[in-house]
Amino acid sequence: MINFIKSFFLYILYIFILLLVQITMLNSIFLGYYAYIYILFILVYPYKCNKYIFILFSFIIGWIMDNFLNTRGIHAFSITLSAFLRLNFLKFFDGNNFIIKKNDFSIYDLPLIKKIFYTFSLVIIHNISLLILGIFRNPNFFNSIVLLKTIFSSIFTTVLCIIYFFFRRIKH
Image 1 (tube, rainbow, N blue to C red):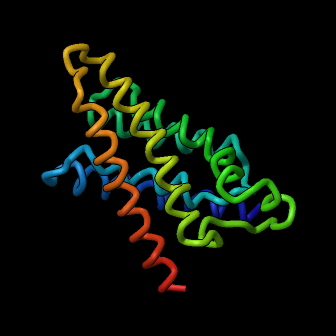
Image 2: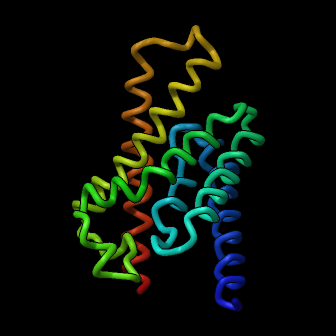
Image 3: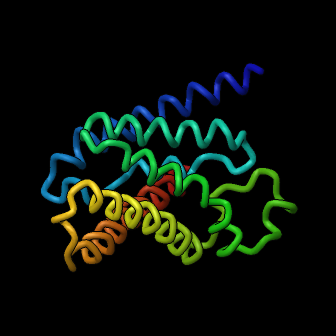
């Protein structure tokens, strides 16, 4: 029980730091809303932990982003969708045997190329759903730039995530 409480508060702190970086730094630089670093939570959350708490945390991250950006639920939906699909993408990129054979599996165990594809896939799902819902919010927004924004945003976010993984590996 103590470990659960300790890890719960550590993840709350991690969420706070990710949102602080997202809201204060990434939303105010030139590329602004094109880098969604808060998706790192989805990528690094342990795979054997409680799925319902994970989905709840993911929704809360999106809800906080929606409140700060006044986006009416599109971040909450997009990150919750990514959280819901993450295990399926991991099975696709690393095979179905990792869960059975390894109880302490983490994304840091994946080879670099699989890690890049896995990260990019989750990021692109998040960004496509985010931009499609943004189109419904502003119907005049639909044009050919949406696809370019999705690809650019996904590449930029994936690069930031891989940089994080690289420095995290050096630290250990």
